[in-house]
Image (cartoon, rainbow, N blue to C red; front, side, top):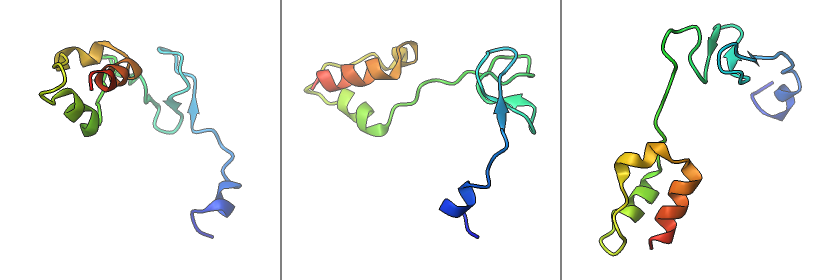
Length: 88
């Protein structure tokens, strides 16, 4: 049996459960780490929003007003995409 449709019926165990620190269902039971906040590490896991190259090229065109690329991590992804599309 391969990796396809037939083998998906055999998957019945939970891999993630609720995290104590962030409350999301991201705590991996076998690894004992949270994929969202990084618990039990002392520092909270944090990563910046990465935009696809297509949207970055839209905002860097000379015809469109330049968006502040430094502050992209402050806004949600949907807001950034709508701003870059509206500037065309």
